[in-house]
Image 1 (cartoon, rainbow, N blue to C red):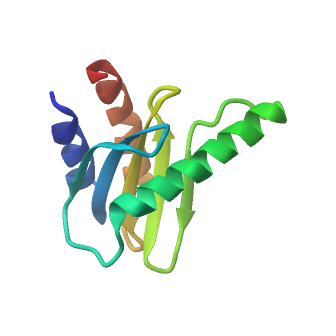
Image 2: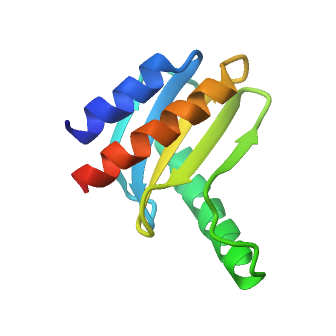
Length: 119
């Protein structure tokens, strides 16, 4: 199964799913899928999100809090959820604020091993 198909399945199955991005540690988008047009630049948001995720990862490791397994934040317009796939690749999902956060997290956890197999 190709990256885009896996990302599409996650986004489409999540209630309120808007977009998904597979990105490398430098913020380069490897693959993306947008279910609906949105007012925000998803790829630019993804790049900045990777920077934040990398900082949080470093903070957790330096303070012996353990390895970062997920990072999410909620704005007035979106919920953004990210999960490392490997040390170099990340899956980020954009969800509407009224979307099903728990289901989205579940689908992401299910999708990460599939994406890892493809890398």
